[in-house]
Length: 98
Image (cartoon, rainbow, N blue to C red; front, side, top):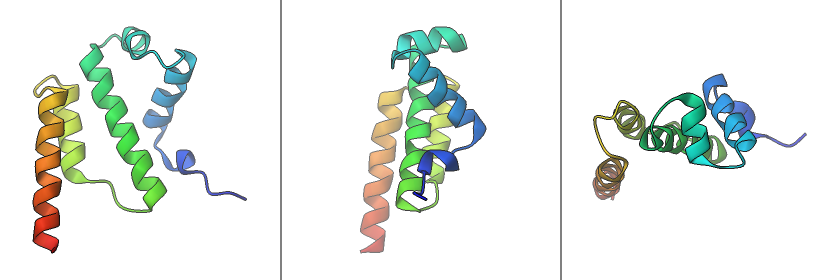
């Protein structure tokens, strides 16, 4: 039986994926269904993507990515700023490991 990374997602993440598929991939429609803004739904989707990538790579979820996704979801940080901070954080972590 093939390993299914989607099966490793939490129920909340699976619900978002389900609604995204039913919305034919429209983030605008998905945001309307959840009653949130486009940036909020984009942040939630980015978090699900991170969880899925972690499941595919069999690695733990990045706590910095989780924190930034929470801040985007709450509207405290823009998605663009969160991505910039995350990229900087990851570069610094790679430099530390080298």
